Length: 290
Ligand SMILES: O=C(O)CCC(=O)C(=O)O
Ligand SMILES: [Fe+2]
Image (cartoon, rainbow, N blue to C red; front, side, top):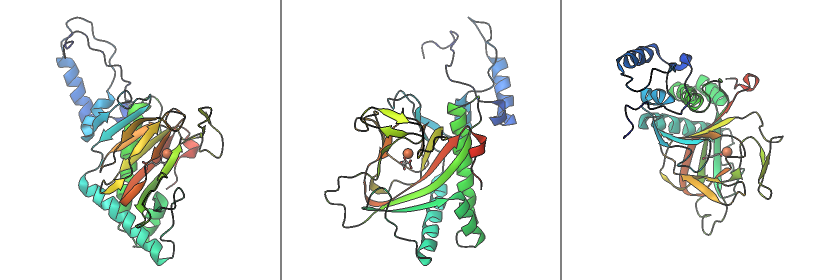
């Protein structure tokens, strides 16, 4: 970096003190004291960069908004270990198996007749764990993973204003065998998460039936052993693709939930694709009850 030592200023926002573990705070203080400010007097000290939160958690920023051709989008990796992905995949499987016993399995996707769709909420997972139908480790990890995503999303996009989880949904989409030839539809049609997108005008109406209180969306992927299923962002015309993301274990795609981020999912043509979908809100009254 050619400008090192010449008063580098990071343009990114700060993270509130409450998010910083005491050990790291101490480290930052020492680090700050050691630094020599050759060309500029010290600035009023921000407590921490979101980057420190990421480093602490062993998380890396893989693509920022510029690389994703948008304004508020990011791809982060390393939020879950392979073992943790395994635990959550097993949870999804066990919960779906319980559905099978009670006659709810094999539901076609609400989005396409060519895929099966299994969804598990935090509440349902807790109930199933209580009943001994799924392991309690999985149900606990579901909560913990949600909190990791929330803390990072807040540090990255909303350091000044607390974000709450409003809904957590573990969703698996499975290709239905023998129905994939010449398939033209999507696994999830292009939409925005907090407004009704009108691709003809490019407007997005923040009104019901949209979940208007959603402010930031997170998709935490659990696997990549399937075909198709990439997430993509488009222009407001819902057609022009601006960025594409390939799911993999521990990868988080986080973005603001409005009309600036229309997105969809390509058809899953083989195998089963599982992801944790999380929606965050600034509105405490829409906080998830678990
Ligand atoms: O699973 C994904 O990658 C996206 C799902 C999505 O956009 C949604 O559920 O609103
Ligand atoms: Fe979405």
